[in-house]
Length: 79
Image (cartoon, rainbow, N blue to C red; front, side, top):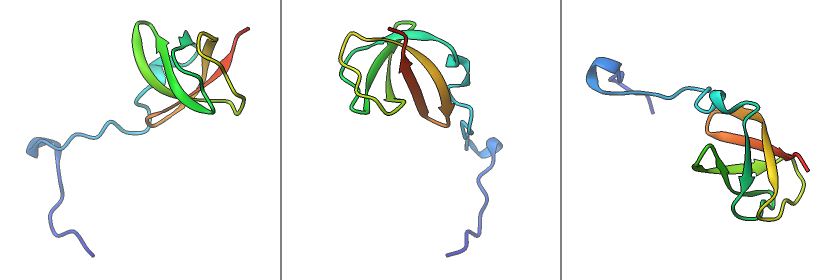
């Protein structure tokens, strides 16, 4: 399959790129759901999907963003 037409910004195509959540690096928050290893966190009043650094984190755990890549947010506990 080969695309014959390219999608450009002037045609309305917009890509968020690889650094969608880069502004969250180092931000602190709290888990809303358990992360096993994926769940929901609250950072600056925003509910975001996140993944733990590999460990199980129960709901209510204080966390810090240690990595972002595209739409993925990786957190670790600060407790």
